[in-house]
Image (cartoon, one colour):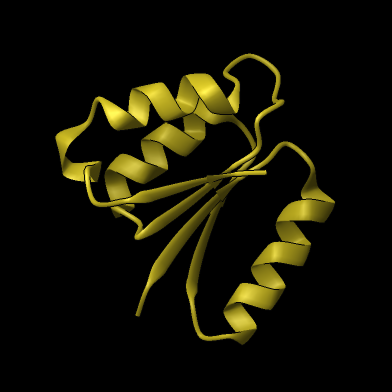
Length: 81
């Protein structure tokens, strides 16, 4: 089963995307901030990471830079919202 990590500070967006992706058969992991997103990416090694660009503290761009520095996540695709 393909794993997708969604990182967004808005619960409505997380709920909407999670519901629809789970309905299509994906395993979905969510985080509400960039730093938790990086931790969960390291732990779960998702196939796809969907990042919100504008988040407080650690932005999606900063999270992306950190994720790209982790060799175990080299094959994870990243998509920005």
